[in-house]
Image 1: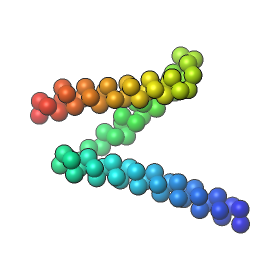
Image 2: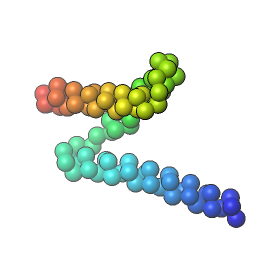
Image 3: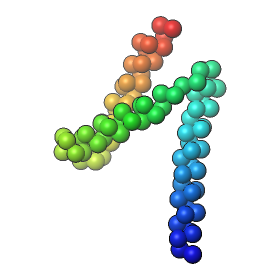
Length: 87
């Protein structure tokens, strides 16, 4: 019975993640009219920065997390400013 409850909660957690991904795609599509699959790429850049910060640069998790968020936001803003505005 305990294993079943673990599976139920794991399924709910994965379903919530899928719902967030779907909401992100639908919000971007409704706002811009373009199907944008760059969400995953930006997420992976942020995750890589956090991982490199913790394991290679030996900084704490929270500073690495804030650094990853800042780098990801900067890349997104630069992409929007210089690439999408020229189209």
